[in-house]
Length: 169
Image (cartoon, one colour):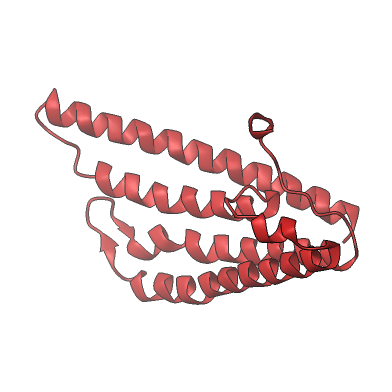
């Protein structure tokens, strides 16, 4: 894997995390406004629930894709740590293949969901329902790219490291 591509995907994953964080903040503000409207103004905005749900689908999907690139998903490494280096490598390759397969499934069936629901309108937002689900195939494609990057790095013998939170050490 070229260094330029790895740098690009690292920056892309960082951008995904920032966009997802922005989505989380926006959703929190929307839900806060909904609660304020309901209990203080006695009038909830009709659009807030659907807007919050749509944002959540998007930011969770994008953060999941970034998690594949950065390796910050929760996993159990007891079996991996018990294996000798060649076994660890094969297990990581198998894991990356499964993740790439899940990403491909998101592209295929998430794309189908988008196409099947595009003509439906979210009444409170006036947007196509498919737009709410479009984050699934996009994130799936990114998951495939990031998992393949990890596979190629592993195949080339590069050390594939996961992001670790120093608080856990």
